[in-house]
Amino acid sequence: MNLRNLFRLRTVRQKLIMISKIAGIILIISYIISTRLPVEPDISLWIWLFFVTALVLALDYLMRLFISNPVAELSRAARQMARLDFSSPCSIDTNDDFEELAKNLNTMAQNLQQTFASLEDANMKLEQDVEQKKRLLSERKELVDSLSHEMKTPLGVIRAYAEGLQDETDEQKRQRYAEVILTETERMSQLITTLLDLSALENGAARLHPERFDFVTFLEVVAGRLLIDAPDADFELQYELPEDPVYVYTDKSRMEQVLDNLIVNAKRNVHPGGILKLSLKENTDKLTFAIFNQGPAIPHEILSKIWTKFYRDKNSRYSGSGLGLAIVAQILSMQGLPYGAANRSGGVVFYFSIPTIK
Picture (cartoon, rainbow, N blue to C red):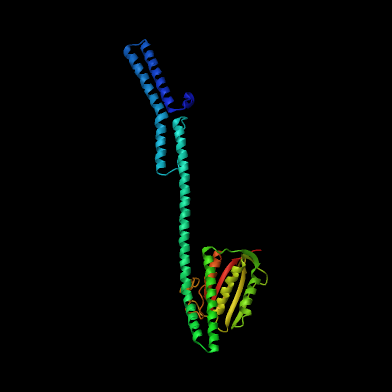
């Protein structure tokens, strides 16, 4: 029979009182029985001592069961919680004050664990907020520094020609000075717009809006506007496109930026009278775009740098802002699309791949 069911006592004090009373009764009864036995007094004493020994062992067992073991378990759990280890709750099943204390201790441990978890989450969020603020401050500083650096040349040109415009009396020269000022102003405006757009893409302020469209027709329209209808074209245009429509799911306006920058880059670097070739190849579930231009090779050590903001190849025959390829890299990276550039025999090829859909 379970001792808990035997005593039906709800507190440790009640159990100790009951045990002491029962022990006293047993001690008295055992003494009376041992002295009434028809044996010699010495033997009677030994019999009573045997009862006393048995009673002491029983009391020791009960004290260990009701006092020592619960206290040891409470001490173990408390030490573990003091080390902030809540993996092993306090386990006491005595149906008394110790069991209630163990339940309260476990509840406290659960509350502490939840509090620590909440604090950790709040701390992580705070760290993320701090890092985000640092990143934003860094990006703003970089943006200001970049604008300051890039504005120096056009502002210097504008100032010089504006001063010349004030003192010049020749109407033709004044007209030419005014045209230079307008050109440099437009250049600054485009540079600022492009840089702000790139900054928005980098810090997540600009979102992509994907849609389903035929990439073959899309490329034909963009390439036709930039290459076929260009009055200053001095190259041999070649192309290799699929005959059937190939559909993709991506941001159409952003992909137009990608194609614009890659095509303009190739157009500016192609040798006079050289080959500029567009290709679009479908392989199972992806479409690979490539544009090749006959022209100077890109040194191997700077191939990975050409995608960096404001990086300019000193071997290039034209002077750009250094932002076009950076925007290409950012847009493609945001979509997880592979891209790259490589030297080929007689020129350079730029490429990227995009998944196709039905």
